[in-house]
Length: 299
Image (cartoon, rainbow, N blue to C red; front, side, top):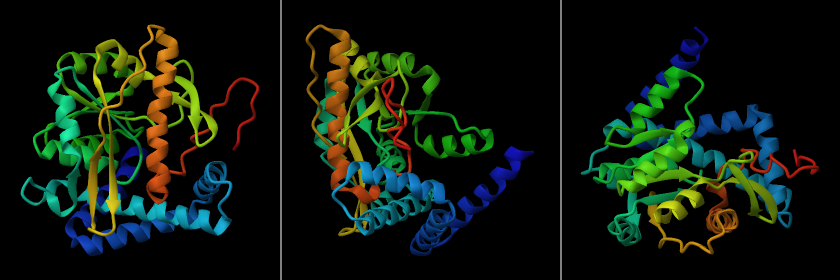
């Protein structure tokens, strides 16, 4: 019953956002996101603390401006997510365009699989959706939502055009299988982890426990690791699905050291994009929660 009660208002909101004209839908979703920002003080506290850690040189007002931008970005994403069933290959260019597609194509043509290394930046759900709509379905690694009704809703939208969801419980096996078949997998690797799945690497000058699975699978299968980010571009009023050239791997033969070195390389790419688009990254996540033994939590 609790799950149904949680699901009902979400289902209704999604239907409302989908039915309204895009400008009105987006405005309403952004307004709702900012209402949550105001009412959910814990999220704001976490966001400010993360911004203090990452940008100690910025003033509180500057950090507040970035945090407001985060919720604007989340509202925009929610509005577009609700409209997924309305988009086709013929009209999806209204919301997103490719940038650097040749980098994906070159990686795909190697035939050894592609690992999209991405983050909770901008329209991360939109990038995988649009890519599948253009005939390039991929596997998406995601943790199932606690509410099974909400999980079914989000999975249904993500998989409208051939995408499949790999549970984090089947992470390693699913990735290796996909790479051996020359397929593409999208992985959000900017969230806090715990050992042994995570290793400590530098992120904004602080050690952050980060998933090392992408590095380990890439080294094992020789798959291409392609940074892929979907960022909002206010000048064109659309998202840009940006693909970087594949990241060259460190491969010295020392599996553990190489996994850490490559995870650090990937994390620095994410940091570069977060620094470029700070208003679009999910600062309200406790990214530095897991600490090395004996070190106090920053929260």
